[in-house]
Image 1: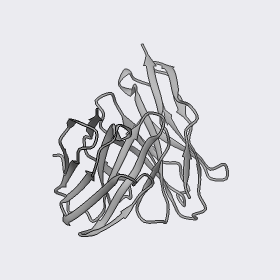
Image 2: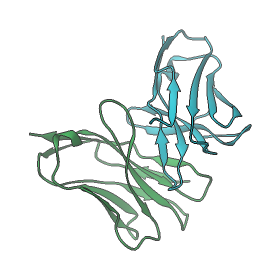
Image 3: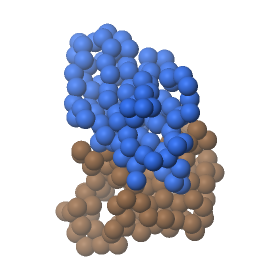
Length: 114
Length: 111
């Protein structure tokens, strides 16, 4: 069985600073994918970034980067230069070999202070 | 440009009544999913479909059934709604990258 753990229920960050949202995972699959989604207060789920287990480089998408440490089974999201619009819930998720299903963590609520 | 729509967006129903939520896609994706979102639990998979008339259970399937008679429609039915099924329900479709595109969600309240 796969499990995703996000240990930070809520976090504050000052505008323009960088922030790291933690995600650890547990799986016995050799091949898997890791995802981060953002859910603003409006409720929609927005895909941010993807990392494959065999990717040698950490994924980056604009101000988002994924700090992938395979041996530690961690896939932390780093947001650089936080903006007020980054205030939202953030979910880490994983897809393994079993079917095409995503398993989600419990989420982290990020609040950006002006 | 929404390729996936959910209806209704909001619903209030009474305990014991049947409820059906609809998910419609225009992307011709094979895989479709129903999740529920509850505080502290993130999103949990209820049921999913991997083709017309091909469905399977997820992590929290008790009390729910699904049907997929056409590629574009995936229905979630609560046969007899209970207060524990008050939640936000998301439909999703699989993408080539292996991630999902989500619908806008249905907020269901069972009173």
